[in-house]
Image 1 (spheres, rainbow, N blue to C red):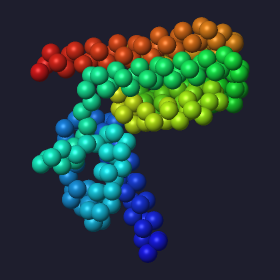
Image 2: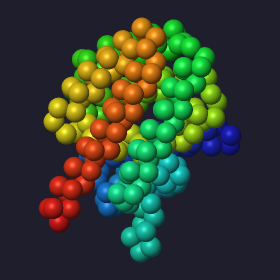
Image 3: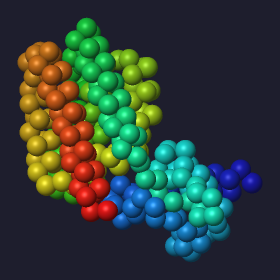
Length: 221
């Protein structure tokens, strides 16, 4: 019985990861309905693991249940988008403050450089978004603050989805790579005040990019 429960949980997690990837890639868009029997047929299973996967995604903030419609991909309001991005700026600014006090962690800096090398070779928005998130997470890890790290992790998939929308705009990936290169250089040289200013500007540009995108979306409605 325990083995069956473990297998079902593993399958639910796998289905949740698959749906998450579809959302981040834009294959599923806000308002799209998640039809249980289609995923059940695709994975050759009952609806129970699919239902559990959808429940997990609702906890993560990617899916919401609407009366008489069922589970759909969540559509974030402008305020929700800006709140997430502004909380990100606050947490990363706090991380930089801790780094200024405690010094550079060479292990995390090396990890950031390795991630940047991979980011230089990627053009796919989904892959770049994941690498970018890992890059910023390594910076947060460098803070050595468990509180900051925990709060940052709670931004989770909704932040990734918003970032993927920003990176979908032409030129944003190239701009991101350039600024990450500058950030690593400043950290390596111990210019932490300049690094903090660059990071804040970098993150504020994401908000500006989303405002332009939201403006275009409203203009088309």
